[in-house]
Image 1: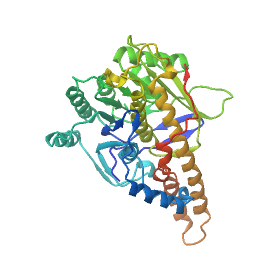
Image 2: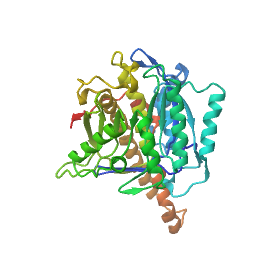
Image 3: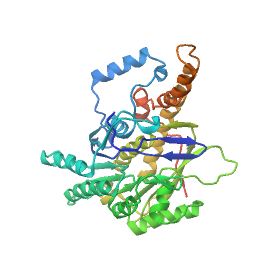
Image 4: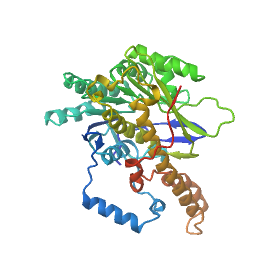
Length: 397
């Protein structure tokens, strides 16, 4: 498995809580557009084969997964499926993600990350218009990725809007850091250069210095990030706030600042899925990168503006970021719902196996079986990525 980061990507979606450990590091992207329509770069022959497979395997979600979609494996497939040419710089080479509790493989150093990018530059393969970066374990690696992003931004200085950087400042969750303490100031020095950041609730608190207890303090935290760091777009990927009597749900909250760094905040709620998944943070990041550019292309002239910031009179729920997030969550909810159904069936089949193994072996293997059963059914549900049906709408906050 070609992953690109050290930690396993494990997400728990349960009763409105979205706990995420993301493992991808960097993918630099050229996303082809023709007018306002994404060009899906799939040959007719491949599509014919794909359709034939689907016609034979009508219950193909029940086929046990043999690919582990996390990190760059997840992000690259998603972006390529939506028409992007991707250069993925992997920073780990692991046999599997750490949701299995074990893995074999190697990790790249900050120097090796820089060397990979330099190799692209030396061969004139650095003509990118978007960059997606995520989890890094140490300050040196954060700084190396920041240097790459700044280099690409500098290269595109003369043409506003021609380069866009999506950054996930992964540091921890649930009040706890998952990285070395020196990563925090490294990210604080870096996020001012990003165009869109994807923190979770804990990371928003860490970067803004505001403890989030309710919607008012969440607004304050987002406002602080806009004002202090001048971050154009913010998407908080998981929010857990008290909501007595409400059905279990997830909330994501986004904002695009105005010309005076004022926030325009929206939120979207979706039903919670009571299951552990791996790679869903990577799926969200890859989808938002593509869908945001698609939404920007639907607004005349916006693609040529620095950081794709909409006019001040555009309401929060009408922002391209809000429109993009609606499509992203529509795709993810369908894919993960299909995955949950298939997961439950696979676990049930395993439990019904009689004989052939000792009890101790069953106990030992159960965790591994559950991890494998919950792997995202991505390829067999790719049509949900390409053709989302929006069900969950943005609301003003």
